[in-house]
Image 1: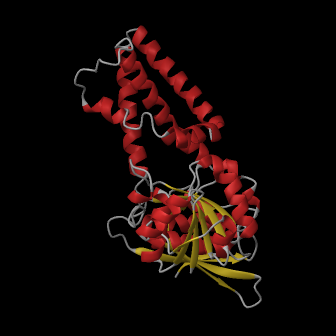
Image 2: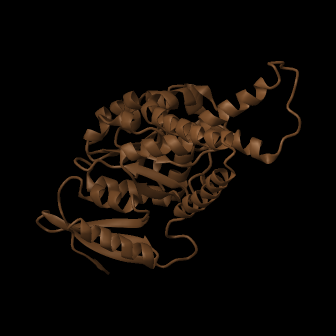
Image 3: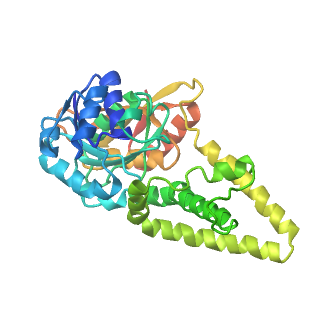
Length: 362
């Protein structure tokens, strides 16, 4: 398998290392900064470095676009223009709706690995960076080629990731709430604390507990990356900020009224919500659960695999692996899905049946 990685920093470099070591792939890299490409070659993240996007994607089976968010639309477009017709093209950006135009091409499947590190650069790339990490995929119902989705899913699984389908709008609203909004509040918290010192740079806060340090760990994240993220997802982030402002107003009103019962209820609800959210993130496949096989009969039409993957992903069902077997006349086929855990397999069987596809345990 030949893989192209466009942008070989921390994420792109880690993709290259994982692809070479775990998928036995040949990896060609491209980076607009020749020094970064040369360093990736030196560290073994890629086997060769291309001079431009077109050279990098020539003959590729899969292309990973790991460019900064602001450069994603142009880089993805260039990759699709030059990539072979049977090549899957994906990205790793934390905003997906900015790639709506690319989603009309059956070869493009948006992606976003929930993995990273405090440090940036290919020097910090790791083969195991994606072990156990959720890797969101945003296939398009009306265009995504099923065989390419299967190829990408299998490839990401070989990296150690857990691919999960989600629609682009939901992804961006989710990231605005659980990723982008925490960065905004962290920035505000440190600025408010600094304001207590009257702007005197020589002063420092007295010793603080772990809550402040934990809550502000991401404050001041790399502006070269995060300004693009804030701006590219600003609609969803604005909605999240409006909701937060409303909830802050409710808490303020309870405090101003001296309503201890309301404050207690608010605090208790937050604890329950956190337990629920963290529990929901532990999908099947953890702790040695048995992996069960389902077989669904599906028509051969664009988007059918995306429809199944999105239905399962939105309901917390993780697909451990999948395989497609078309019929001789290529009008229909069978998709085999491996699901971890009896509960998740049962849920998947019901969801696929609700879509109108015959499905049974193998």
